[in-house]
Length: 196
Length: 196
Image 1 (cartoon, rainbow over the protein chains, first blue to last red):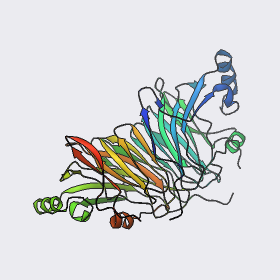
Image 2: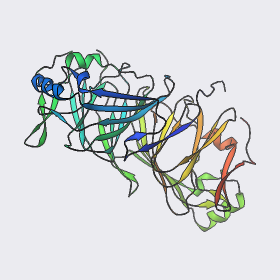
Image 3: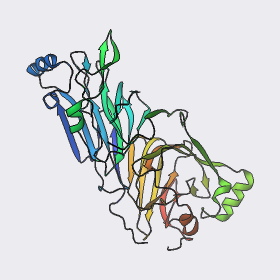
Image 4: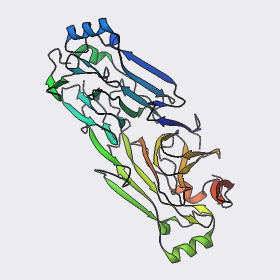
């Protein structure tokens, strides 16, 4: 057999209470200022930003070799909050290698994953503890925290070659948005959405 | 964009208490009788089998299209027990597409993952709740339950094209075994091991 091992097996500990994984390789922090034009209500966004450049979400990454058979993984934390009526959320992205899947396993909190394909099909799935979500290849995805107080905490994994395409969503937005109406999450059309 | 979606996103619920996932596609059951010659102590194996064809482990699979960017997942349950001094364990396998990784996330119980490469390097990692284990491509792996009473329950995922090669391990065995000595797990050489 010629195929040799590239790295050794490794473990990390998932600390659900403290919302962190041990031995992570990267800690990504996204503040409100990095999400310009992602939220529907531009005025609410500017007003909130003037008050505080809030921490919207964080990601702890555990890396693997960028090869077809390997997997990247990590923990995602979306903090509670709203911009106007729109919940705090991740930027959302397609994978650069479009036809690569991703799995999210929810550990804490309450939220939704908003998903859509390049040809405009969309789907939203509820996230709560012990729910495992499968996002097949070719679906963009954005985590949304609908709880007023608690963080939305998930574990994720995806093929190591997937990469991230944030630009498509930054340009055209998601077709659907999740906003709060009468204390409940409601899916509405995104007035700023551009077809691809 | 020409790449079209193959399946829609889906969720399942992980029931840790009842050790099952909702909406599973397959339920695999491995009894002692299916593990002939896997255990070191052949006499203890035959004696135990005469008494009862015990349930050693179970797997609930959630399938995805067998394509490079997709991921298979599921829940694995190794029941407590011993064949002589050797703990109940899974058969263990390489992936048919050898250089594909696998992730295990432990939900319940206490055990080890025994791993080895084709060229005889080996590694054992402890599994307990909230431990995530990364098995890179080219490492065979076997789950072992070291608890006297509790099941070892893990979630797993791996590239959908990986496939299973059980034959190599059935033929040559694992280089190292985990047995109980003075109430503790100890790694020993497998007297039946054959080099590849």
